[in-house]
Length: 102
Image 1 (cartoon, helix red, strand yellow):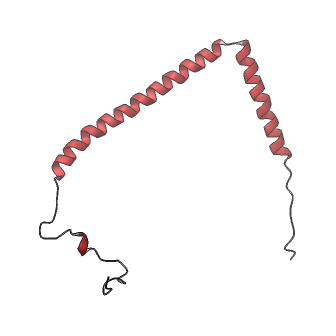
Image 2 (tube, one colour):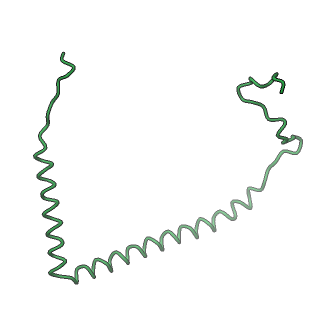
Image 3 (cartoon, one colour):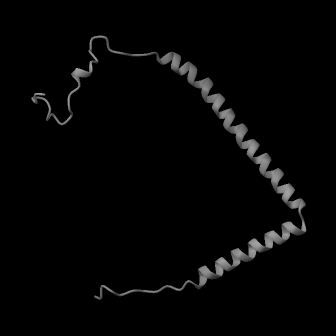
């Protein structure tokens, strides 16, 4: 078994694909130059879609805000009253500092 064995794959398919993409881009540019009303129609369509997405996002935000208020009010707040939360009571997780003097 040769560790330096290499295989070469053909890139003709990828090159052909890039060529087709380039031709398509040039074709779209020529089409927009010949018919500029297409660009106006695309801009209007893009604007309407963006507005619709924005309205959906705002609606979801309002609905979630209205749903969270009763859930938060029902949940309440829980805390323990018989425990001290002093920083001096914090211990190292590994246990290496338990008997260490400062």
